[in-house]
Amino acid sequence: QYVPADAIGHRALAVNLSDLAAMGATPRAVLLSLVLPDALDVATVDGIMDGLLALASAHNAVVVGGNISRTPGPMMVDVTAIGSVRPRRLLTRAGARPGDGVYVTGSIGGAAVGLQSLRTARELAPLACQEEYLRPQPRVRAGMLLGRNRAASACMDMSDGLADAVRQVAEASQVGITLDASALPIADEVRRWHDAQGKNVIDAAIGGGDDYELLFTVRPAHRGRLRDVRKSLGELPMTHIGVVTKERRLTIRTEAGERPLPDGFDHFR
Image 1: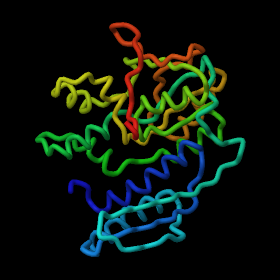
Image 2: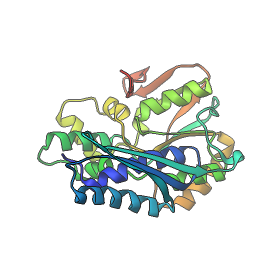
Image 3: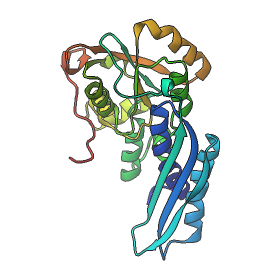
Image 4: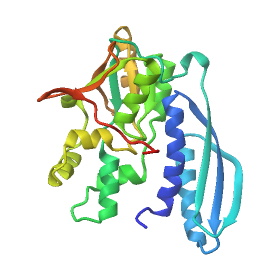
């Protein structure tokens, strides 16, 4: 009820493009299946398609097929995005080593605040955060450049939040990771929102999902490669937020000391 039709199409494709970005892949083709209720009006369907096609065009991806069928409800939008990447440029979750730096693109926690504010329809809602939730921008070019320059040793998208991405990379790479709370890129409006509700800003931002940013690790010897990627990307921030450790623990350093990393989002919990 609070998500416009074009945002439904945009988000459905952004989820898939973000996965391609995390592998350093170039989007090529999109398959779309729609399962639509009889009562759904044509304008809504047109809006969904407008949002999806606009994002596909922005990343030079082509909708090559799919299917449409009828249902008594609910509506379903199913997207498969196909990309390509050379084997030596492929990014995975499994390449991090002790001593690697941990980085993120953009900022964290904004989309989760956007969703909360849309659900509650509160006054003084953070409009920038709502836009981050409704129309997230998958970091396709960043992923491609990180892979092409072989700057990243491991990479994952943060669609389920920073804490989940850290845990996934650490498990796949069989390492630990320590984050620096003071380095986390959290926007002022996100901090104000959680402060107003009496929540721990760091834990809320780490656990929130739908950011569609990239978490990646970089070897100390490859920081020059990362500088080249940053120059090519221009204004997109890439923030050093932690380090990969030999001890297989997930922790975060705060002013009060080091503590275990909070749990992130879990689809099956």
